[in-house]
View (cartoon, rainbow, N blue to C red):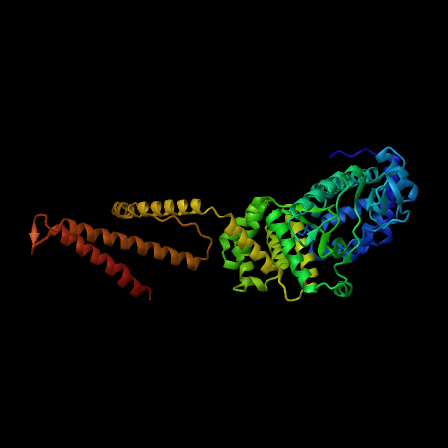
Length: 527
């Protein structure tokens, strides 16, 4: 992990700050979600970013901690205006006044990594300028070094086997580096705009690529109306329920069709302007491959149909066992999940709860999940809460299943499907011709006394005895049937008794005796 080294004095000073924050919040007396959030906010941008990453890891953190961490306040004191000017001028290599006709000295918003100012270009266009905090890379890299050192001590604690903190830190550092490189957010903004350009009721801010650098991002200023300001929306003539329906439809499209969705769709990142829903802040986006989207669809269809095997295969396709695989336990947990929903109509299900239950099954079975799936679960929960307030009669799951159904029909190659079905029908017919020969082999091995049934079981003594009884009776039935067949085949052989061969008679009598002993006399004695 490429981080800059910090000198020992800075490390020691930072360590003392961390110890003081821990002492001030009385962590030695116990941990609660609220106390954890307070500590993280006191510790600054690195820990805030770490908390935000941890909030999407419901695979190893309790739900109440994830919910608390997702609400972390990233608003911090703005950096001085002189530092803002310095960052802008260093990025452009020219005075700020030559780029902007006006630049608001007061920050519109200030977060842990950057802050936002309103400005006006020399062309007269009103824009928003996102400026990275001076020295934030060095601050975060220093904290990462300290946290990495702390992880070495965790291997001697009981939590060492539960959470791979080094993996979490690597993920957090990767995300932080992406957010500190505004070219990544610029690319996200362009990609989102391109994917939604054919949607009449959705848009995003126009990027000013020529003014965007690694540390400065310039985009169109969006005023509009906050999507949760219902009174203002009604006053402007908007239908609140229609906004909710269109918001849900677009978000599900982002997930199931584009595979590129907004990972933080809270009301602050959504505006309504000129009859369109405007998506803001593309710093954190989720990506789903075509395979992952297909597996998610199979999970939902499997739940709808009560198909345990389909759900199990999809879960194993989405993640992988981090320890020893116990597929029997996974099968039981999925069966419990399906029993919970029973025969409920998909339209009555809560999609956020479905994904929460699914991640719970994966967590219980030590199946690691891709970060995109945890982002999806949190994004669905957020968007569903917003949609319910806009349109209480709309269920997001109906929109999800509608999109899945449309995709299935649209993506089916009917020619290939018919060819595969015809081939399967031919194979089945061909194999059915082999059944008589297979039955003859079974009878032949039965006559030789070589027939056996290999059964691996993990059941009680009574059930084991029952299985053995069934197996013995089955073998005896096969032997009796074989004797009858043999008797029928050699009925005309010499010598004859009343037109029946002695050999046939012996076979018939032996078959009758074995049947009577097994199915009548032995059964009577057991009673």
